[in-house]
Amino acid sequence: MAAEQSAAPRASGRIERARQSEARKLARRSFLRVSVFAGLALSTGAMAAGFLGFFNLRKPSGFGGTVNVAANRIPLPGAEPVRISEGKFWLVNLDGPEGDVLGVGGTGGLLALYWKCPHLGCSVPWLGGFNGAEVNFPGIVGWFRCPCHGSTYSRAGIRVFGPAPRPMDTMALSINSNGSVDVNTGAVTSGNNENPLRAVTYNG
Ligand code: FES
Image 1: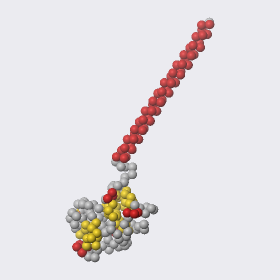
Image 2: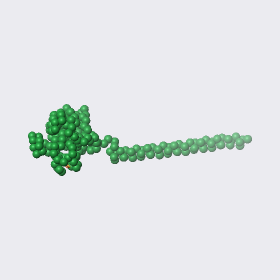
Image 3: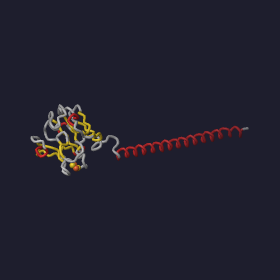
Image 4: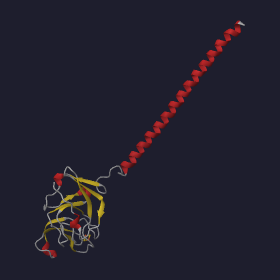
């Protein structure tokens, strides 16, 4: 009888120890599981960030995306066009009907002209001293003129000479409240004689 009484507490002690050991194992397993999932989540996030960074998908900038032009780089009306290398365009600030050599009703403003020639793709430079008399527009000095086959364009990108099939293409442009300009170099519109009407009024 006395032996039975002392065996009972020993058995319950063993059960309690077994329970505690099982609880510790369970806690360890849960911890490992959480760690594995956390590790997977972190590496997946890092891979996604790397992918977006590699293909520049988060916020494309530079050519193909939006190029911001600070207010102090924007030409005054009638001043020489500014070459924006990072976006492959010329930023022109037309002074009234300037550049509207065909008289479609342009009233001036900012125009972003893609510098790729619509003929065979050469980069078109601005020639500030080129005299329009050579292309039947005497009195107008300063033209875009392609070095490859001579296509010649007004300040508004209107083709007046050479083999190019159309005027220079334009890029979408919007003005920010701080006076800077965003040019979406991924939004290119084929040039046509209405180019001067695409100019956006700019007041600084
Ligand atoms: S590529 Fe410009 S005129 Fe031919």
